[in-house]
Length: 371
Ligand SMILES: [Ca+2]
Ligand SMILES: [Ca+2]
Ligand SMILES: [Ca+2]
Ligand SMILES: [Ca+2]
Image (cartoon, rainbow, N blue to C red; front, side, top):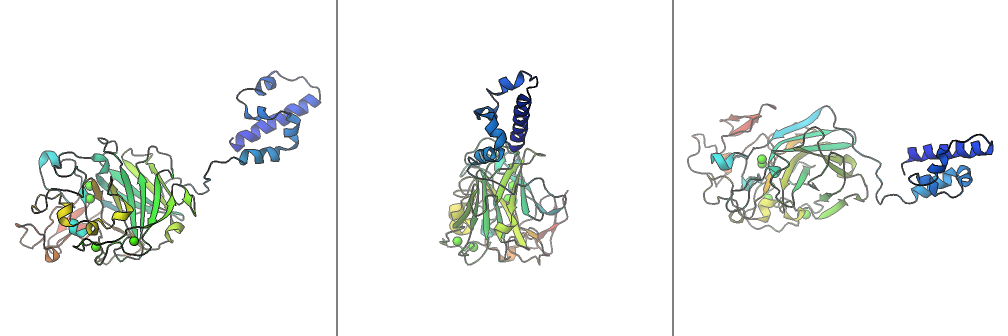
């Protein structure tokens, strides 16, 4: 029972016994309250309850739920620490236009579709915006999907990846099943660490171009409330937007990073800690490509039903060289897979998301702020 209710009932019983002892007129209500819904009615001798309320309280506390939480996130802080939009793939099938932001070689994915035919679009795994916030206790990772209530692809999962030493190799992966409500929960939430630092292989955020045998994020330190800290990570649907999922990650559990790179994932079976980095786990031939311009690899094959966003820098001014950083798209200079017909400057990617503007001299999309 909830303690405040208990106190009310206890107080009521104390009064009841006191009034009985004084032989005062007693309203009929207490008799009915000694049966039925009132949990305190289980105490056979009300006098005993008045003598030992502390004991009774202990008895109620003796059967707590399996996991007790002390730090539960509330709402997001006012000031955001970063934002990155992501390509909206919802119109691709009907317009047959080029997809943006899918570059297997650079660990960038835009594949909210079924494999091989790419004729079914899954709006619930199409990331369109990401945000990061933090306060004294939590890092909040926010993922907006095109439509969270999509067409029901199975085993939908979302994840947040953090690189806390800025080497391009992810250190933490926090995975959540699709949450069902706007209440914070640890249900379906797990935290994995890459303790042996093999995520990313030889070339972080670049395909190692061989089937590299990383064991991914191999160490599970939190599983739905089980772990050293029962409050390590939470998830909910945003109370303000039914298409947005919010994570709250306890900073102390993630080694309290002062600087980090953070990005988000949405997908199904590939959101598996053992599969990272996905561009090392699979070859390009196996993975396929979502961009029809890469006609050797198009369409998507084994790497399907997945989307990720670029990495936001939090707590430091990025140099622009950080692997996977949002502001830099893939220049042709280092890209052996460039399609023919690129621009005269040799840039591969010329379409930028709404918060970016194309910069021809640097072959990149420059961040201009949220639209
Ligand atoms: Ca993407
Ligand atoms: Ca997307
Ligand atoms: Ca790699
Ligand atoms: Ca590992």
